[in-house]
Length: 89
Ligand SMILES: [Zn+2]
Image (cartoon, rainbow, N blue to C red):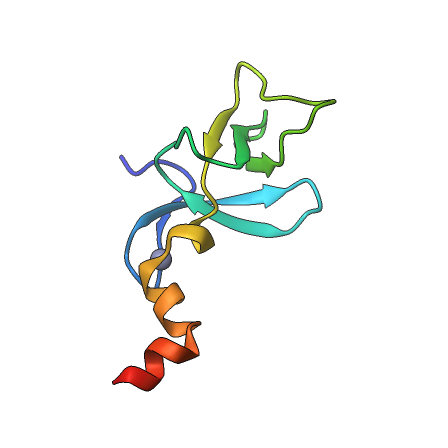
């Protein structure tokens, strides 16, 4: 049974969760939680996966997990977005 919200990055095929940020934008995070993560991820009452940035006022809550935004870890996209590497080949 596929996990709801689980998808694959179109660039590197890593499993990601598509989340909705507190600003209402879509943000892909790595499916696996990371202690180094900067984004708090939780599932709301309707099953929507939401993300937000923990702050001093609102630190990580017990039902939230830290994840890394996938854009920070995506190998394929970092290659594509780095013109100096593209010039090498
Ligand atoms: Zn990727």
